[in-house]
Image 1: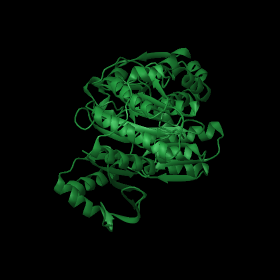
Image 2 (image 1 turned 135 degrees about the vertical axis):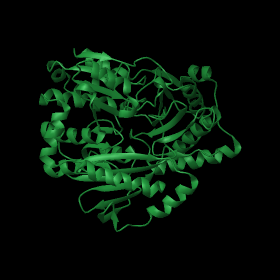
Image 3 (image 1 turned 90 degrees about the vertical axis):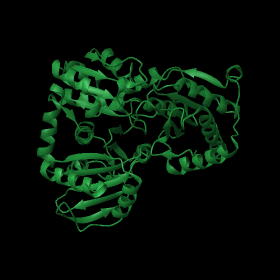
Length: 471
């Protein structure tokens, strides 16, 4: 058994790789990492709504307390961006978050965030991973009884909801949303945004209907991801009733999903482009914009229109969070529905993303589809698609060899440039592009394609299936 950190922490199947013993080992590795860098201060511990999250939190708290680290233990499941906010507010040494984000319910995860509030960068996770796998050989970790840790004042129970909600109220114009009299459907997908996203809108006096807002570790037997495929019940409800907008968040509330009237789903890539244009036009902020290598070039087109700098990063929000922490960008986003903004946490926040979309609709007095249409008229059309391929060992070996070769053309379009920031990305003569990369969180290879029209996009997707699967 090896503990392996991917793009967003260590994830494994509960009771298979993700066991209490391995959690204690990993927590000891985090404590050793912090001590080796002379980092002191408290550690926030939180979780999403998955099986055994509370018990895993307690196990980690005991190990940290035994190592002399005070623990701020969240009293209920807590959104990932709220944990990030709490690190910064308390000037903590970091946080351990038990979440597998949008993964299926049999998964659990451990994510470490350092003192700057964003997801740990590779040099940090690499050190923790190395220490954990060394400790696995001996099984050694420090431990302290929970009651003793409490008695010594090393465990403090906290609820960070109030301070986070107060901060959001200052960053989003809720009065504008209320005055627009929007009818809003909110779907927390049985996850951590319950009592956050819906409460902010209700407190502002908005007309809000909430679905899937009770605890269910099975997430309604669907992956807790607000993608079009995983929210059929939400789409159906939007079709049946006259909501102006539907707002969804994933299991740990760091991703967003947006529906328009009649259940029309908008790709995260489209939302990122619209919000960048809206924020730049209305907030008068200065700074660049960051996107991962797998994210739409609609962002580039909007950035060019407004004459702002573009930062292209590897996949993994830690790289965007680092730019937010350094105040270099006004917005950072990933095609996998991750977003944050200037002056906010250096972490994905699905709650503020949903609220900003509602604010944009209220301010512009148009449905999302019209806002998108206007943007396409201004900067051009960008259609994108992501395909996931589960490959056999033989197919994977073949794909690894093929990806290293630079083809002269793809689907009949000349390759003009190759980008290897993360995976292999081929820029094509017609402004289209494709990217192939192996996932850091799931056993799949991801294939991304973008083009200005559906026909070209379909051709690029067909090429990807043949290229990777040989069929």
